[in-house]
Image (cartoon, rainbow, N blue to C red; front, top):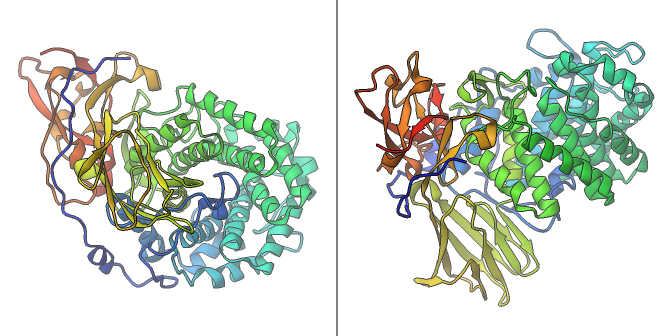
Length: 608
């Protein structure tokens, strides 16, 4: 690992104008499908009640954004789904994947878009207290299109399946997840009955599809219609078992999970969905064989060289990786959060946090969509040109519920603040509100609304923080624990963050390349700010490590991260006698711009 230069502890400064929430929402057009009522406020619900048993105890945690960029990011995507155009998610548009009508892209993935829409909005409604009246009538319309033997779509050949039949299985799997997430929000006998019919359809075709013959027939070369279309059924089956306690769904989920494998060149999103279902069935059954399988798979991925410097993963496993996919980034983050909830191993939380601050943020477009980033010759994301409205936008919205649900967690009278985002924790006797200014000044305020006399707050010190200083009533607290919480008091956490330069070879097998970080943020050179950095030999430009320094920044853009803004001298490869200075920006800032080019790994000259 490369050594970073010596620096004094750096407490980031600078200011950023807080976006007025009403003004931000005022420009939204009339909803194409129905109005919603709240601003991601209201009572919080654990993600477990929405996503099944993959995330820990249902009464442990809840979180709520109150106003800084992560809240705005979630609201941006929610508004895009409800009010956006190009395309608008109208009733007719969504139902086309259930009727199989030609016209728009991917209607052969029957239930994919409609199921994701149902699941994403149900999760937001459950997690954030949103009122989304469009959900119920749309779900009724959707389940009315179910075929007599349980599947959804235009046609299905179980005896001699082709790529379109596997595509239908993929979409039906996403629809099953969406129906179960809706049922968790609003228990409905008709919806559960439709889900059971779909589950029974999967049971009926299992003798054919849960076989090595089928796995071989639909190899990784089939990509989006490969065998992962079958193995990802674990997620919906685990949710269905959780709701019904029907052992048949549990047993099929377990049997399918044994067939999930990471095949070279295969679809990452499908494989990670398969692992998430396996983790869910472990939490439902306690069978350690399932947990061991997920842990081994996570370790295999982490050591594969396919975890990118941004904390994301590619769309396809090596040797086919050439771009990312927003769905896969969300799944990697959610799988890591689920493993942390299950095992309490901090490496999983650190991985999810790294993804959230970097890849997940960088992947989000200014429209609120998520999509695809192209990888350069070294396998590093450098531009995000594709808005994948057909999957990633909705999967990104779904991921916010899990992310915010892990800000706080409760363990008896000990409440842990795990992720430095805005959040809300509420139990019978304790209510805490966290307001994060990390992007502005490295500080978080936690207000105690209600408190039990024996309640304690424990803050995590992330690996990227040199220290976390806690201030209570104007006095510094020793350590990371605040005992005997009192209603009405405010606790402030101050995260000290330093610039650091790390070898990219440690993360992504990029010898002689380095990455620059400040706190949790990966920094890069952006064509939005430094267009002259990029030319034929820009990969050979060299940063001068000893010159790395903080830079003041007060730009009124809600996605700017002034706390991370830095400057660095560099040696241009094409004219090394004319040294220059370059701005290094958090890659998360990409959301505020049209797609632009980024350099995020560098050659480094250690001394001036």
